[in-house]
Length: 291
Ligand SMILES: NC(=O)c1ccc[n+]([C@@H]2O[C@H](COP(=O)([O-])OP(=O)(O)OC[C@H]3O[C@@H](n4cnc5c(N)ncnc54)[C@H](OP(=O)(O)O)[C@@H]3O)[C@@H](O)[C@H]2O)c1
Image 1 (cartoon, rainbow, N blue to C red):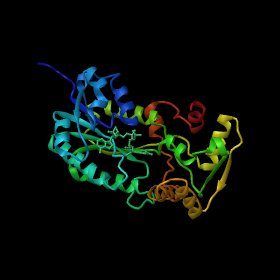
Image 2 (image 1 turned 180 degrees about the vertical axis):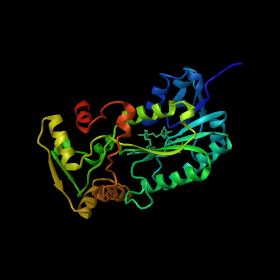
Image 3 (image 1 turned 60 degrees about the horizontal axis):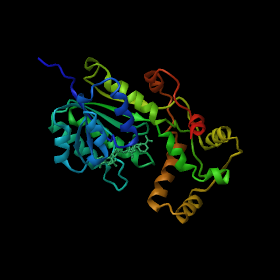
Image 4 (image 1 turned 120 degrees about the horizontal axis):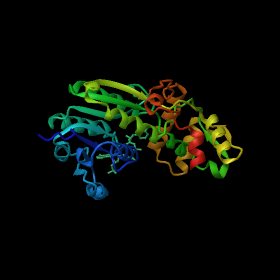
């Protein structure tokens, strides 16, 4: 009798988080026990060469997902990066396809602030997706990931030239590094099956939380520069952003971020991430020192 490991299929491996999780899983699992579902298989030829099963799968194409998930015990659903309102339907398509394919357990990359009312709309998509997982009757682990630390660069664009972070009033955010999230995700996915059988929501957020004044300080210390934090009225900020080329929908989304952060939606004191990675989570200052 052959005892091959149950097949784990990962989505999102051509992206940053999924790619890091795949690399970590490969340190423990044989390539033959891993499959990937990718929108464009030409981006994954190097994975096929390693013996990983590569199948084409788009979140809006159930037939392709059925092929991708065939024979899988567990999948990692990396949330869609769609910004045109298709996120929920993408996730429903993936969950339905996984269920039809007989997948036992779905790991889903949710967000620490998933909620039906958050002012930052992607959080409403994550909350709705968690509802779909609960309704599916399948096992699932929803990983409520902290706000990605590298998103800071989008919020402070131009600071290296201006020396000023000029944005609306904000609140503390548990900025969390992809590397830490990937380590915790791989660790959870590798846990023995006996510890699974679960329908769980786990928050994975960094050990420190910073607002933009703290970010200015961390950036200044890392780069040896004086950085000023300037408060901007929301509408004045939006006018400037749109004039500078930011699409209006994106500017509104970012205003939603500031509002939600003021309400404390992105502040977490949950220590699970630090426990899972057995160490200190990467700090914002360390990110600035590195890049
Ligand atoms: N926690 C946070 O603060 C935060 C911040 C931003 C985003 N997110 C969410 O976290 C996810 C993963 O983050 P990341 O940094 O790894 O993003 P990323 O580098 O943009 O990777 C996204 C991955 O998902 C795949 N994907 C997206 N839409 C798809 C679709 N319709 N069908 C098939 N594959 C699809 C992409 O495939 P392609 O290579 O074909 O594009 C890519 O592999 C994002 O997609 C987003 O939902 C979270």
